[in-house]
Image 1 (spheres, rainbow, N blue to C red):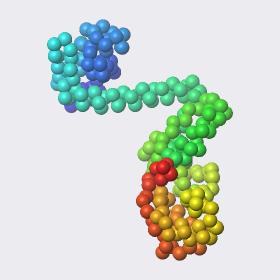
Image 2 (image 1 turned 180 degrees about the vertical axis):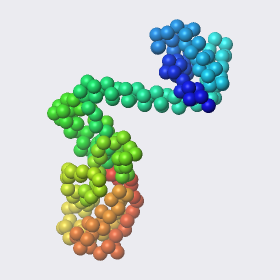
Image 3 (image 1 turned 45 degrees about the vertical axis):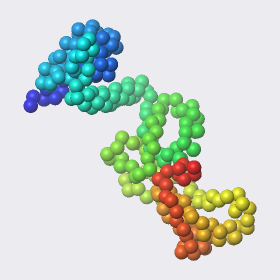
Image 4 (image 1 turned 30 degrees about the vertical axis):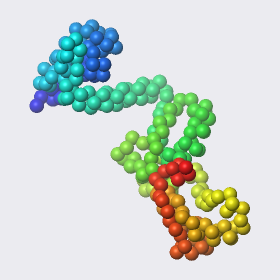
Length: 231
C-alpha cells in the first residue's frame, strides 16, 4: 500500500476530526475558519483516499458511520498527542521547562501538592506534570522523568535521593491509645490488621520491633492505596 494513503495530510485530518466532533460541516468550518464547502470537499477527498464512507447524510445533517466513529476515536487521541508535543516544544523554546513526576497517590495529595506553590515561586520557569503511580516505574519505556517511591534506595542505573525516612505508627482507637503501651501492643496483636499491598511487610516489621510473636498477627484486608486504607 502506498505510504501516502496511510498518512493523509493534516488539513484533511483536521477537517474530518472537527466535522466528526460536531457532526456538522458548518460548525467545523466555523471552528477552522473555512467555508462549509471547503470542509465538505476535504472530507470527500479523505473518504476517496481511504476508499470508505466516513459520514452518512440524514436530511440536512451528517452522521458518522461505524468506521468513521472508530477513525475519529483513534485520530482524536493521536492529534491530542501531536498538540501536546507541540506545546511542550513551544514551552521549551520560551524557556519554560517541564518535569514529568510520578508519585505515590497519597504522598502526592497529602505532602507534595501543598508544597507545589512554593516550588513554582522558587522556579518560575518550570511546569510539573504529576502522575500517580503505585507500581515500579520503567524509565526506559515511559515518559516519566523522575519518581517518588518507597524503598531502600537501591535502583541500578538510577540516581536516588532520600526525601524522608519512613516511620511506622500503629493507628488505633482513642480508647486503646489511652492504655499503657505494653498493654496496647498486646491488644493490637489480637486485632484484625489492615495493610497496604505495596508495603506488605510493615506489620511484620512492627511486630519484630515491639518483640511480639508473629503468629499472633491477624492480617486483614489489603489496600492498594493508602488513602483507601485511611478512609
